[in-house]
Structure formats: structure tokens, C-alpha cells
Image 1 (cartoon, rainbow, N blue to C red):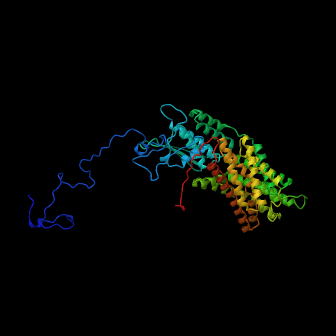
Image 2: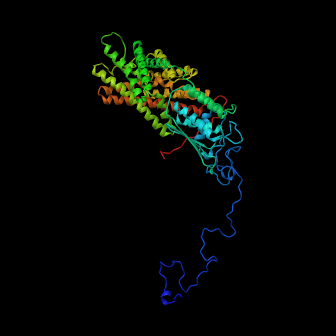
Image 3: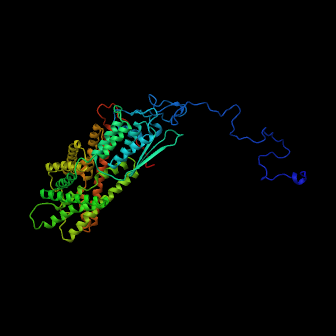
Length: 558
């Protein structure tokens, strides 16, 4: 049926039915477009085309305008994109240590990294990406398990992947997990691999061998294939420790005895501290063989030195000898304080790896609590037996420069043996420890400077010399630093803090423990600062220019 054309159908529409911009009836209406529907205001004008000219084939990561990060002379100007301050020129000094060059790249945005110059040759099909990533993770696992800092592990992983031609790799290191991702281009799927560190050990000889392997991989003069790298890595894993178990036990006793001499002990105190530390070491080995966690191993290892000190205190009125029983306990604590983990934790925090730093410092806290538990159990027993454990018997009352310097060198020597260092580095690190003690004693005992400031300066020199030695050897700095800070560890402050708690004097105990924490942080910050100064202002022989090192810049925490 035809539609009606009545008056009701011709009535004006409401505002809801028509647009406010529609001309009213009786006014000339505008002509509609040919396609009978309105066009978008974003439509292209006539004569314009959406077709783009063909582009030459290239990487999806290339900069606009045809510039390439690896072009000669650095990055040229691009008509499509130019930063506000210009495109920086990247020049990496090949004569600088690979650690410095890789840190420069890690602290650089991925878009500004130059294309790597392939060091290790492979066939025309390109590098075997899964095998290169697996080799990189295995090398990083050995370094992280050996106590290296997170930034050093990432730098090593970055160096290995770039040496085999994988330039767009991003390594990530946390306390127990390592991962690395490689993306060939923006249109290809990334390849990611990860590895978990479940067991940690202290063997600086193995650590040095891993650094030698990395140096050979990153050197153009040495052709290390993937098969050769895997073979050498397997030999490093199977390599036995350079020192047997009995040598480690004797070194533990020698360390404790030398530490007791540092704080004023004599021959009897030296023998008692050495015997207590060796008993504690054997008990810790027994607990480790039974599968007990490290927390309980530290508890057991801390009890024999404290028991020897309490026994000498009880026998003092009946035996005529001049000694300091408190020095026996202090010497035993030197062999247990986790200085290596503390330095690594603070270093990770200062370099921006806060998750790894928090995990390392939490580990240090658990070890410290274990030592507290072990010593307090024995001290409570001594208080109940009316042992005269008096903190007023101040340690370090007399200054003996020659004896204490020899004790510091001996302590660093024993510490190096416990860390399973290579024999070629033991003498150097022992002398470094002696220099650290001389600086500390000159500032604190002679100059009257606070122990925290004296410790920080001495630790800074240890870090400076350690970095200098490692740069000359193209090796890790840990073997030259860790044992040298042994004489600076806060053993006496820790003991007096625990004694205060054992005697129900919490205020005095907290004050002593706070001083111990301040000394430990001074050691860690001083070592890190000395290393940073060495990397900033010192170059290896023959190096024309030190590579620039970038760090994150922040303003008031934002």
C-alpha cells in the first residue's frame, strides 16, 4: 500500500530527529556529494596517493633515513629523525678491557649501540643462536655462582653474545636467575633462554679461568669456535679445587689466630683462636655433608671459638698467663663474617641492581643472625657459669706496628687460601691486605680519625689497587680485593655487641652492632668507589683513550 502524505507526516521534526546545523525548511539545501554520503574530514585531497615508494631491504632496527649505527665515522645526520642535541658518535676503544667496553654498551640505550664487529667466525648460515645463548648462560652461571656482581655478569654475557654475532641481545641477571633474549628483527619472534643458579661455591681459580675464556672469545687474534668454548667450559667445571680440605681447615685457624693478634692477642690467644676456628670449620663441614642449610652451618661454626674464649676466661684465675679471652672470640668471628657477600650486595645496589642487592643483603643478614645465635648460646652459658666477660677490657690497647702488619698480611694470605685463589695472586693480595691495615692504623691509631672514616679510606685503596691489578691481567677484580679486606672486618665491634645482649645490656649491644654495620658498609662503599675511580681515570698500558661509561642520571629521585 502506498505511503500516505497526510499533514501528520509533514510536521516539523524535533531537535532529537535532526541536526542543529541542518538548514531549516524553505532555505536552499546544499548539494549532496556524488556518492550520496558525507566524507570524512581526514580524507586525502584529490591528487594525493597513499602508495609509498619501495624501500631497500634492511634491518628492522635501522635508523630512519638510511643511517646505520655501524657506519664509518659514527651516526650521520638523518633527515627523518635527529635528536635535540644531535646524534652522538660512539667510539669504543678496542685496547680497553672488554669489561669497560661492555659496561659502556650496557649503560647505553639499545637504539644507540653500534653494530658489533664479529670477532668469532662461523659459516655462511650465521651463528647458531640457541647454542650461543646456552653458552652465554652457562658462563654467566659460573660467574654469578662465584660471587661476581650483577653488572659484571651482564657485561660478560653481553661480550660473549656480541663476539659470536648476536648484537641485539638483552641479558638480565638476578640473584638466582639468568636470562637472555635475542630478537633478529622487529618482524621475527624473539629467542629467550634462562638458567637458574641453585648452588654457589667459592673458587676464585675457576672464576679466573672463566675470565680467561671470555677474554679469548672477545679477542680477534684468537679463534674460539663454539665447540672449543664448550670444551674449555667443561674442563673448567671439572677442574678440582687447588687446595685440599685440610689446607682449608689450617687456613681457617691461621686466619683466626692472625685476627686475634690484630686486636691485641698474644701467643696463647693465637693458639686458642686457631684451635677454636679449626674445630668450627670441621663441624661446619660435617653439617654440610649431612645436608643442613648454611644457616645452621654458621651457627655450629661460631660456637667453638666462643667456647674457647669462655674456657680461657674460667681458667684465668687458676692459670697464670697474660691473655685476652675476648680476642679469641673476636678472632673466630673474623673467619665467619660474610665480607664477600656484603661487598657484592652493596656493589649491586650502587650500580642499580636493586633486586639482586636486596637478595644478597638478605643473605648477609641471615648469616649474621646465624653467627649471633651461635655466639650468644655460648656467651649465655658463660654468664651462667660466672665467667668474667668484661667489655671494659678494651681490645687494641697497645699499638704494635710490626706484629700487627705481619698479622694483617698473614690474615689476607689465609683468606686467599680459603677463597681457593690461584697461587699467582696469593702474594699480591696478601701485600694489598698489609697496605690496607697500614693505612687504617696510621689514620685511626696515629691520627685519631674515626674508625669508620679510616676503614672507608683503606677499603677504597684496596678497591683501587685491586682494579689496577685486574686491568693489567684482564681478569676479575675479586681475587685481588676480597681477601685484602679481611683485616678491616668489624670483628671486635660484633663481639662487644653480642656480649652486651648476653649481659642484658641492650643499649650497649645495639650501639656496638650499629658500629659494626657502619664499618661493614664503609668497607663495601670504599671498595666500590675505589674500583669506579680506577675505571674512570686509569687506562691499560698502550690504550690511547679510555672508553666512556654512561650511568643513569636522576634529579632528586625522579
